[in-house]
Length: 486
Image 1 (spheres, rainbow, N blue to C red):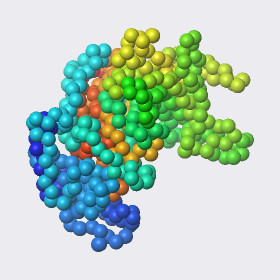
Image 2: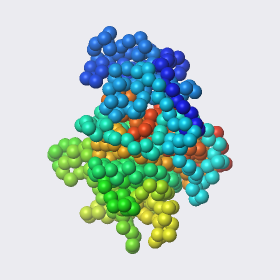
Image 3: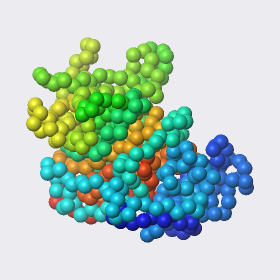
Image 4: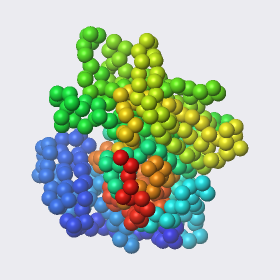
């Protein structure tokens, strides 16, 4: 166990080329020199002042070693590392190259032991999935939010370069979802620790966890100029929770969200008569039912200037209070093979998809804690098209300084329910933010067994070097792998 060891910081050691993965490092705070270390161990330079920036030992060391051959994600340049630590952008108490020895908790100190976790009784039996934890909770560093920390980064201006960035997870399916689309999928999501979002300066800041998917489509088929373009409806579902001071015992304001983008963005022209791309098929809000409180509306991306009332996608939300240890199960499934909706005199037809969320922590609520998040019609789509990709992204809302608060989220899934017993997950690959002299390294992803992964950000963290590789791999077989419906 992590708590049973005393870690000693050793000297930086040379990295064998077979152990290296792609690491990109900006070696100067002013951004005029960048080193790219490839998987083959070769180093290329972008920018200027190459000879004064790069040193032989910097080229050969992109991580630091702790006892037990624990490899930590880290920045190779000693000066930049020291600055990052001082700025609250890297693990406090760790300064590779400084030659200091750092003692970690001994057996009688439980503050750094991983909290107990086990699958909810409603989950599919994950023990049958024959999965190997490639990145465990004993890899990297975490105090699990139990050590009080002052926010060093809060004393500096938060920027796109130094704030908490998103982490991601991508899945490899067999058979591939592209060749055998999913029509019904569940994820289980647990805010395992969000209490520190209640800090005095946490207002207008929060956490968003995206359970991402892309719906297949034949939009653009047979249209000139689209023969080499593959379109899809990009979408996500999941929670958004906002922080800020709250009364003792009260919860945070939260939303269940379902967003679906059109297959292409509308015209950027200020001319309202300008034609939109021919392959642009719309995502339209579906019909509500008596007693439902969700809201869906067409909106525009913040990154797109929507002239003449044009929109880019539909966003559905359902309000709910959120707190630590709250467990939700999110489900997305096709509810109609051909739904019709008339809006502003125009009639739209396509498949209808629904996202629901159930609060498994409070099943005694009205409806058993079950809420509809939204229904969306994929205009033009036939029922043969379903979900062709799935992934996850753990994000922060607002500009969140690197060590402002600790938080963790556990996600289990995806569990494909239609088609039944056809798909097997072979692996889940982690995606870390770009590593630069100003990037935040206070994050971690780790496998908990089966399809469960923990996402952590904030003070007291440092990810293992393997965070950019597979988080877990599986070897189980799907019972109906050869029977994907056409």
